[in-house]
Length: 489
Image 1 (tube, rainbow, N blue to C red):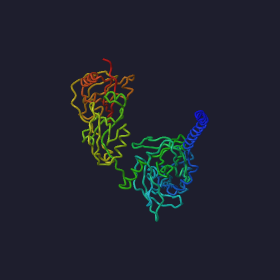
Image 2: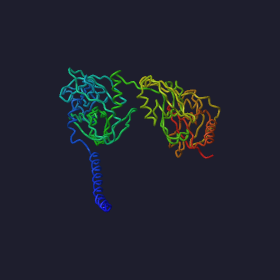
Image 3: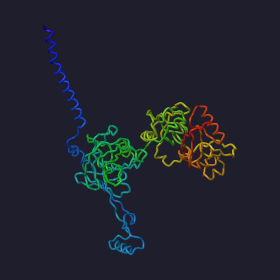
Image 4: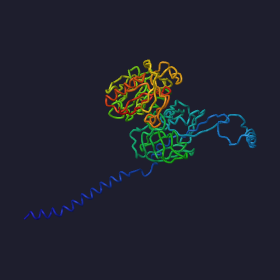
């Protein structure tokens, strides 16, 4: 008798349970949707918190007459004398005049260290800092770094100054809210909001690591901070991409993790001290990887090893750097940044791919700034064999170097290799940039001095099943690797 009752009870409870589960799912979905669209009702509290630490920067520079803008008067025009007389009456004459420029910055310590862009204060004779309170103080330059466009200033105040801290820019994700603050177009303190549009952007600098944002950034915002919602500085507003000169929603802020390293060195030394490996490198392309037997096109291919730390460690041209100080090397850009961020004098392990296997080298880094103007020295090869003939191969016409050709190409007397005298414009070699006057110094990562040397390297590559041959090309002393497809024999 109880079974039917139990059955009836279950049949009535099932619809209720289904409705409850459906309501729960809808509630969860709604909560997720609300969370996904969550944003502050206002940025006012954050603005109140960070505003006292943001500053306007005014610079003053003495310029000679004629270096600034002047009326466009055609030479020989009757108005030319008129404008000369006008300048004389106004008291200008040939006297220098003072020019002003505006920018932004932010305080990073209570004792008055201020960060801005190098281009904001470059060549300035006087620098004035205006605080949110209206107080104005003179500033001195502590140090600058043109490579990242960062400058560190110092003001003397009779009280502790409000300041902001750097955040971890690596945690900033595409889509996160950010706020830009500064002095756009000289209008005074101004706040704009947007999101992180992209990460790890490179413009033209060696150490570029920009956060791209659609927060409005205009002229005058340069040097100002880019804040996250915790009020931490995750970037320094530096550049915009615009056909008009105004904001179109593509702004770039140098990542705070780059800036903080630079600022720490400027505070301690008054200059930057970056690690230096001492190599010339290029990216590994798919055809170069195939020619060298690499499984993937990654790493940094060494094209030259002048005198320096890498040469002392035994590194060779043709090595592919796949790991530096325990971190994988994706490409040349990542290697340059890794080396530059490593302390001068530190001994690191560098893993290179050479002759089909990996080799670990220990390198003690030098200082890049000290070697900035060093000229790489090419390694001399063997004396060329006596082969006066020329050869057409790969769409190239080549012949061994002789004294006359060395003189024409302004090469050292001991330079060996094959000179390109002509290039078929329909060939793969032409497409990859080879031109008459280039010198082939290596083939298959071995030095060559004659056409027979090149023939031997081609034969070896075919025997190894290679589809292409790696050539080291030098043009005006600059080395570059190029992989050319082997012709069917």
